Length: 498
Image (cartoon, rainbow, N blue to C red; front, side, top):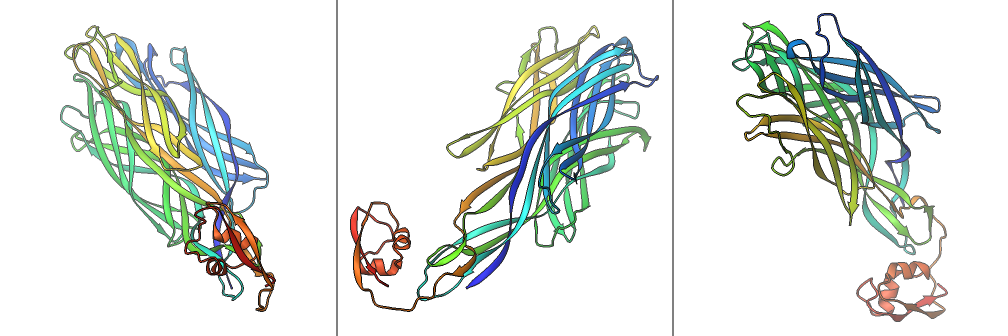
């Protein structure tokens, strides 16, 4: 008999709480007075999670971007950051517990309360899930003439490390013709793509790129749009990450920025993106474990969990539902000055074992007509994403890229994609024998008689044998059976007095 130690984990807490973040923005004197707010968007990032007694303490940042018009119709942008701390009651916390956090902006209200003053209130849903690691002894192999066992290959997942990480991607970006250091950034969007993940002892290496798209205002040339792809390599310290662990990166987001400074004659600008991500390292062990055994005592119904990392970019169907009519605009005398997304909503539906994320978002375009007047045109679009089968999901959905263009005949068409990141957790109960011990040491004797058992179609010989304390091989031999499944209802004989 062999007891093999494996690692697994169980979910001990999962709860979502509302978080309200108030931001009072006072624009510097060199900014124009606010005439019209074209765009206000917010995103959240978790900087870290600590256990404080019986509470979870989640520290994070709220990032707010405001695009507005000033005097004479000039378009300006202002960004603000507000720190926040969320405490969530959670009993029975212990050292070694892992916590994953997902956040979603549920409501955003804003108003101008003065020539250069804005009041912004963000309401968010902060969800925290705590997992506790366990080591269990699984009965994986034993031999005894009078004991039968059934074995299966089972996968055990142990979370070695989990951490919210933040880092900055920086580089220089070459500007296209027609844009120089006098330009001003109006809006930006970014797809963060992780192409390679590697676990080093107590470290995780991430390689990928920030694929960004920018809308800028160039004096004398109007509104311009260009794209940039910036590669990155980041090595992050994560305590507990072992060499042979498997790494998953979830809930990645990036806030791209450009610093328009005269570099190389005004052709290059400094690029940076503040990246937020949840990283966890897990270990997968496959063990041939006893899931049933005769005359063996042990704990059963051990929970075996399986993790699925979810990461997808979902494009919006631009031909179906993202065009809007705007009769007062045309492609020769009007221009898009900003494009953005707000009011993102998503939920998960399950049908016949298939899981789907369904979401909607409001896409907006600020358009300037030939007279210099700016209006905002909105359109609601839907997006879907197929998910691996799981019982619980921890998923974020955010807009990763948005742009718009006037395509003629007064029609504006949006182009957008949404990043879906997170993980799914499947948990099933299996009759795994743990801490197994043989309950009796019988010696071989001859049967004193036989008895009848009326079996029903579909029953398993293993279950019948266990119920009647008889070996499967004996049942098959006495009843001239080849299969372990009862094909049709019948009477089976089995020995008694052994």
